[in-house]
Length: 89
Image (tube, rainbow, N blue to C red):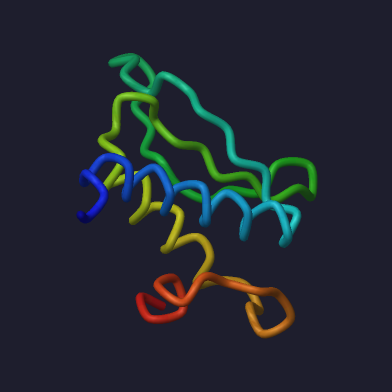
């Protein structure tokens, strides 16, 4: 029997967090719904550190897309990536 979709999404998010960690990319969850200071999830550099800020309110599938987009910007040849990540990138 196949895993339920949310279990599969959770595993994919875990794979992406592992890859980000290997690249010294910090993943931070935040509430980005403040209408005074609109912000989107994504990669940024703060004081020389690479950080992906993810809106807590984003569904897991969108968090996966944000993390994949961030990973595209790095040299991934030197780290192990799950096959599905390599396929998507």
